[in-house]
Every structure is written in C-alpha cells, then in structure tokens.
Image 1 (tube, helix red, strand yellow):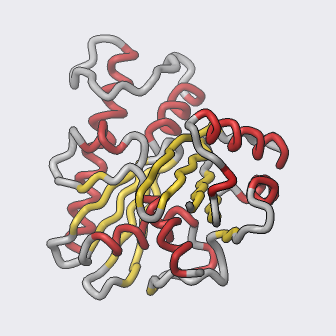
Image 2: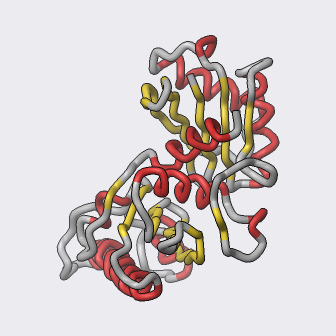
Length: 256
C-alpha cells in the first residue's frame, strides 16, 4: 500500500492506495505549531479511525507547500514508516513533466502533482484548475504536454477573511454553496459576491486560457470548493477530488 500526504496552508490531507485504488481518504487541520510527534500521532489516529493498518503500508510520498512545516511532516512520516521508502516532492524527484517555467525547482508540489495526474488521464491541451481555501490556481498544458504557464488568485476562504478584516462594517460570513444572486442583506451580498464572482472570474480566466492554448483544452478541476463553484460556471470541467493524491501516487510509481 502507498500512503500519500499533502500539506497546504489549511489542510493536511492523506490518501491510502491499495495499488491504484484509494481505500482511505481523510484530512486534518494544518496546525502551524505541529511537532513531529503531534503530527505523527494525528495521522496515525485518523488512519486507525478509518480502519487502516500502518504495518501494511509499504511506501510513502508527501508534498508540502508550507516550508516551515515540511521538516516536521517528514520527521512524522519517518516515525510512522520506519525503514520504508519515503519520497518528498521537490528537486531531484522524477516527475515525467516538461515544464517551460521559470525557476522550475520552486514550482509547488501541488502544481506538479495535479499536472502529472491530469496528463495521465486526459490528452492535452489541458487547463488544471484547483480551488483550495487559500488560493485558486490555473495551470496551462499545451498540445505537446508541456507546462507553459500558470495563474494564482486569492481563494474563496481567503477572500472572505480579507473582506472581514479590511472592511470594518462587513461581518464574518461562511461560504455557502447555494445563495441568491441578489443579496437582500449584507451577509447575503457577501455570499453572492464570493460565489458568483468566483464563478465569473473562473469563466473569464478559462476563456483566456482556451484562447492562449488554441482552444479545445479539457478543464480538469480539483479542490474542496470545486463542485460548488463550478456548478455556477459556464465552462464544463472534469472534477477530480483526489487529483493531488493521484499525482503523488503516480510520482511514487515513477521513482521506485
């Protein structure tokens, strides 16, 4: 079995694969104060809760976009998988990707994993769209299968938080996947702006990406908020909730 772990600014997510099949999927809040022992205990607890046996895990791979926590995560996984192969997505790992980007070693693990997984399932050209809490990202893959560019914009949750912190009269509100377009109160107006504004931004960006790639690009989307926001978009998309972890599993296979 392969344990895949991804750490972003909000969540530590993990998926256990039996061959190519995901058998356990869960997530934890990413705690900036995590020690290796705390992180290991949390991961072990979640896996045990889901009925997984760590002794059956033969290899592990992780990706992190939170540098201050990357070392602690590595130590935690080394505690959980003693003597077993453990890979980190970063410089030196075989990705099988052709990246025409500046400073390729600094490209985030999330971009690398989602691109690898999308290319393994769909023919290029592709637009890989990720709707995480902190950021919404776009990745362009041309007809030759090369990563040729990307865009990063504030995510839904970070936009909501910024509104509350920078505008004194605006309340803190939670994201709602369904709300009326014409908000009748302040909270409704914020929810409308975030949901439909995000959808309109995504549609506009996808128009531009399609033009840049010569049209006909398949949109592959992932992220916790992808189903809710994409339901309001005009562009069709293939939603893959575990795309990052599928990419981690694939990179693990390529580096055996």
